[in-house]
Image (tube, rainbow, N blue to C red; front, side, top):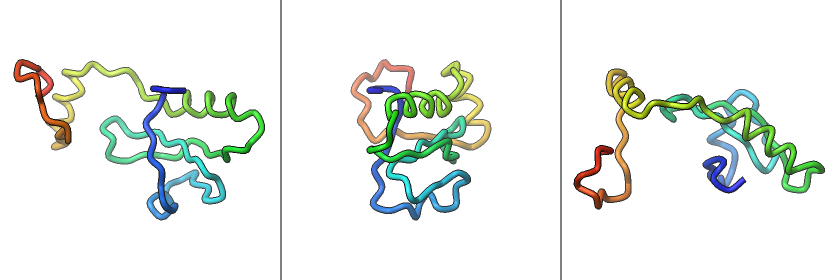
Length: 99
């Protein structure tokens, strides 16, 4: 599953309470972000001690996987919608087109 999804560990479930599909009784919530990461929906949840965990994780991660994107089109459309993103990491390659 390494590299299959991004995740965060929450102190509590307050951030997810209003999301459809949220189950506060479960330890892990699998989210499917929208195209620009501005919002998300809960596609499933599980406990780390559930039986069949590997299969369940694989199915949920597949359900949460986004559609493939053309980077230039994705960035251009995001800018048209007023969505911008700035990396917290410094740009070390000044010739990079990802600025």
